[in-house]
Amino acid sequence: MPKVIAITSEKGGVGKSTLAVHLTGALIERGLDAALIDEDGRVGSSLRWARRREEGLGFPVLDADEVKPKKLAALDAVLIDTEGRPRRKDLRALAERADLILIPSGPTMLELEATRELLDFFEDEGAARRVRVVLTRVPPTGQAGEQAREDLRDDGWTVCNTALRSYTVYQKAAELGALCRDVRDPRAEQAWDDVLRLSREVL
Ligand SMILES: Nc1ncnc2c1ncn2[C@@H]1O[C@H](COP(=O)(O)OP(=O)(O)OP(=O)(O)O)[C@@H](O)[C@H]1O
Ligand SMILES: [Mg+2]
Image (cartoon, rainbow, N blue to C red; front, top):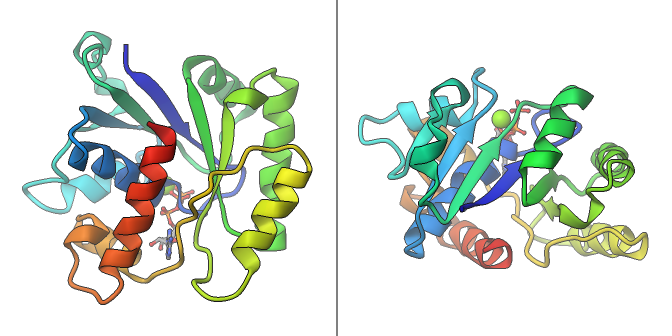
């Protein structure tokens, strides 16, 4: 059975779809079989990202309504992109389904506060051990990322070693319906390197 990796957050616009699309792309580049399920469907979702170019992203991005579980059974990984601030009921269902729950979070105080709320929720649900924070949109210079990681770890939460740094190439990739790897941008390589390293932490 595939490893089910859900990506969710308490706040909207933190970088869920960006993480979901790129992580799936990195697994594919590494020769694994993976698909992405979009449970959001609004503007800016991974489904719309994948539809922006005729050739798509190079892996299946499925509408939650069109998923055929049998077809997913042979995959190595199934990633799930969710809407921002899902209802508690949906989060509970997600926690039951997922082998791993990734919570992308910027390193600012407000974002970390929202992330901690969600971490508390998953802990109350008995799912804390399956949850990891992925720091994202981290300024490439300065200590904000490291500080956030240290603070969260001091409180006992699991944080991925690799953070996604903040680069405009991700936005360009979304606009083009591509992965940052395939965008002509001076930071494309650095960004993709973050993604690949992160992918090795999750599978
Ligand atoms: N590492 C990053 N560096 C710079 N910009 C980023 C990064 N990750 C995401 N972004 C930008 O932040 C914005 C929000 O990202 P994204 O759409 O992935 O968030 P989301 O959590 O899926 O939002 P929503 O809750 O609306 O679904 C986009 O403009 C995206 O390009
Ligand atoms: Mg999204």
